[in-house]
Amino acid sequence: MDESGVDYDARLAALASAFAQSLPGKRAEIEAAWARWRAGEAAARATLQALTHRLGGSADNYGFEALGAAARALDAALQPRRGAVPAQVAAGVTELLAAFERPAPAP
Image (cartoon, rainbow, N blue to C red):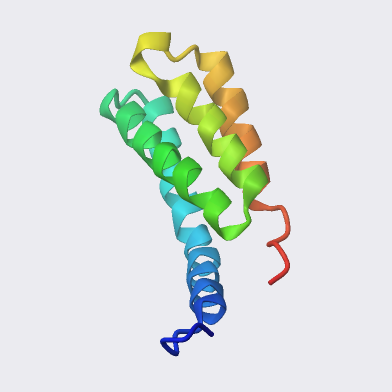
């Protein structure tokens, strides 16, 4: 607790807990966007890229380094200027989904 009475450790722990609880929903959104893109919905690539970009930017802040790294790698593979090579994207999605299964960091 600092001199103003704010317990930053408790606040950060609460944010990390909320982030961890949001992960099943984030995973479902990523899986859905991936399925739509594989089914031929071109706009789903941009959705998938936006989801992975946000996840890659936030995961490390809450101790989910492996998840963040996998999300950033997939985000990079999905960048329009890179051409989104299907094999690289599929491998990136597989790695990202596996990263969701890794244990949450200790508090």
